[in-house]
Amino acid sequence: MEFLYNVVHRQLTADVVCSCGHPVTHLAHDLLRLAGAENATRITDVLEGHVFEGEVLREPALPVAEICLAALTQDISPVSREIISRILLQIVSASEWKVKAAAGGRDIVQECREVVRRGTWLFYAEVFNCRAPGASAASLMILESLGEDPELLDEAYRVAHPALREPSFDRAEMSLDDAREQWKAKEFLRDEIERQLTEDVTCPCGEPAAHLGDDLLYLAEAGNGSPRVNAFEGHVFDGEVLHVPALPVARICMAALTQKLAVDSRLTFLDLLDRIVSCDSQGWGIPAGRDLVQEIKEALAPGLGLLYAEVFKGPTSGISGTAFMILQALGDNPDRLRSAYRAAYSMMDWVLLDDGV
Ligand SMILES: [Zn+2]
Ligand SMILES: [Zn+2]
Image (cartoon, rainbow, N blue to C red; front, top):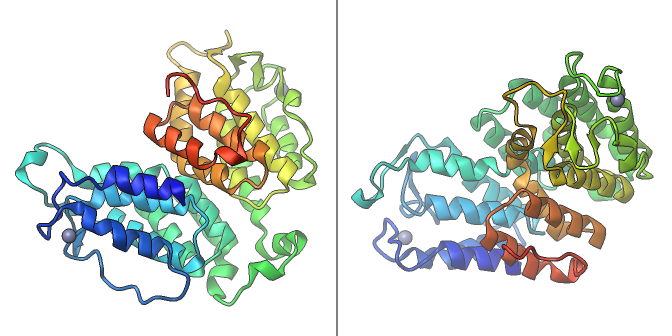
């Protein structure tokens, strides 16, 4: 929770005035209380009149969105998850904003949506994890409100639907195999692989890129972390040079990370992403005008929230550290990186903080 405290103190500064007239710092207590709720506290409208008025966003909405997103990367109780997800849902559902004249030409609704968008893959993970059915349902609605691809959203809904229907569904009691049976969660991944590795994606080896799909699915399902990252050499990258399939493969890695995976497989997907984001140039076969390095960076922006959650969740130092290195390579906000590094240092003391950070 150290990371969350840090975000709260960085975001809620005394120079910003809440719509109630007090400095926004007064919201810190309520937000930390919501994030720390253990039992079914009644969701009181503590933020009404401060952060929003009905569907109208007020000044503190932006820092509150940042704080809520940070809270979801932490190990918080199902009740808190639900409350926080609902706050984010209310923020992204807002249609108007009203702030002091000093805000000039800003558009708070849009800025808030950009913040929440960093949590996109985290919301997908929430849909599948279903730690709290209310949070899963709110996550689906957030994704819808962000304008996510309806096809992907339909697939997520179809796969998660049985669990959303049964609030009493207890994941803790189930083995991984049972969960697979019940959830058919891998169907989501299988569909995403098909969607991403279409016929028009060519692999430098000369085969249709679909052949990579088999490897990626095996990596997710076999649970032993094979094939290793080296197997993608000559197809996805060569040394530090990217090939065309790197973009769809990066997206597939994010989709895979929303699933319940064996530790070795999770680490290999992260290693693969790390390899991709560490490449700094692109192969000669790539059409002029395309900048694969930049395209991959943009494709992974909606995955930042999920990567932070990996940093804090572990469960191994390899997973925490690799997720952190990806965030560093993507050049995320230096303050956020530094504070995550400090908070999770015991999990990843083998990782060096970049000098520039
Ligand atoms: Zn207030
Ligand atoms: Zn190939």
